[in-house]
Image 1 (cartoon, rainbow, N blue to C red):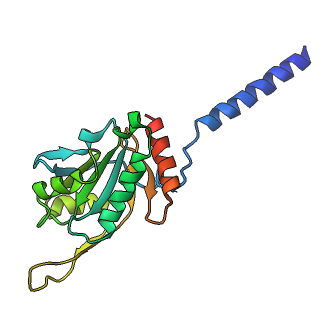
Image 2 (cartoon, helix red, strand yellow; image 1 turned 90 degrees about the vertical axis):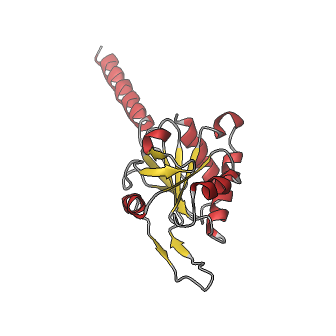
Image 3 (cartoon, rainbow, N blue to C red; image 1 turned 60 degrees about the vertical axis):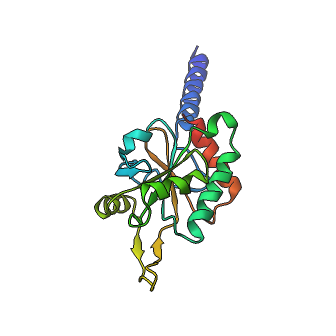
Length: 198
């Protein structure tokens, strides 16, 4: 009888440990930000000129990236890599992902410009922007910096900005960060797991 009780207790403890292990935080191949980055939260304007908040995108895994359409290399390269990674997911889930491209250059990136730009990367890509106050609020929230260079004689200027992509689950909770040094294999794996958690 004592032996049976001991076996029962051992089985119960083992089951509890395995159950808790299954409930532990997700481990990502890219950089985990679940404990250091706040939930998705913003008030911006979309590529249709409509005011939107983060609530519009809850229910879908969401990627958040800051840049500008006149960017000569980093932005198109990053968005192209994301489009390629999303394209490697199963067809039935790839449309669940939303990629929010937040322009930090509202002077040139009008809603029409943003719409044309994001259309080139796929239906999952949505352009957002806002006035400087709105942009400062959201970039400060995610510890992103941006600044404007000097205008040349034609009125052109460069914009420096952070290049990280922040990934949020369907509840708007921060999960991982994609850097330009992450491999395509790791990005696809993490996106696949992010979508699978829906």
